[in-house]
Length: 262
Image 1 (cartoon, helix red, strand yellow):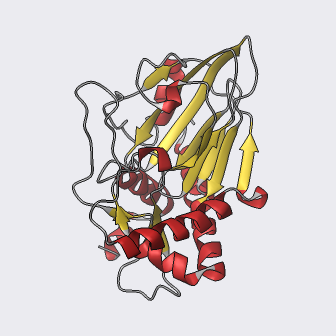
Image 2 (cartoon, rainbow, N blue to C red; image 1 turned 60 degrees about the vertical axis):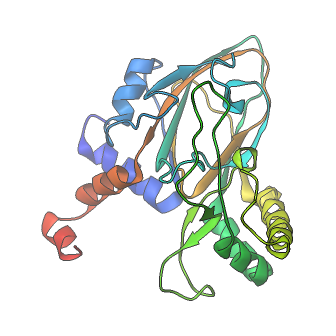
């Protein structure tokens, strides 16, 4: 990653597939932070900027435990969720488990549209809120509710491009601003959505190891993990979507061609 050629391949793979691994990263927090900053500056949230943590519940969040985590996207409680997330396991001693789970949300949405058009339309139409309220002095909710599946504006739902997935059942707020019929429709549709996410052919499992960095598109790829034992130290960070897209564009296209699309 010392040259832009490596970053071009890295960002290109994220843009195409939704995620990318970077092998042979030095197993230090400092090297990992420098790697992430080759794409763009690190986004600071209530978790801090660059994180380095263990399962000690120092932050009141299920990520800071040893529990299994179902497939989800991060930051559903933000109006503008982080675009990229990067993970690097620095060590795992005295135990086992903790395999990482990736699910392509765009693919899952396409399957939902084919198998249950009414559920797809419902999850594009019905808007819900997320919240982050477990830590002292923190009560974060987006400025408005959002659908689980966002599609390109001005297009038909039958052919529209899916542009964002927002799904974290653990951070979902109560549905207080909907009719009883709409609430029932949401739960029926969400049940079908979760069934697709949990299919074996939807899940990609990988055991991350020290030196193997994972970066993924948080607007597309849902992530999770299996439960683990022992002591595990991780580090990583968020990157804004707009900054990632800017970096990807400038590495793959000429400036004059980028400006033609403005």
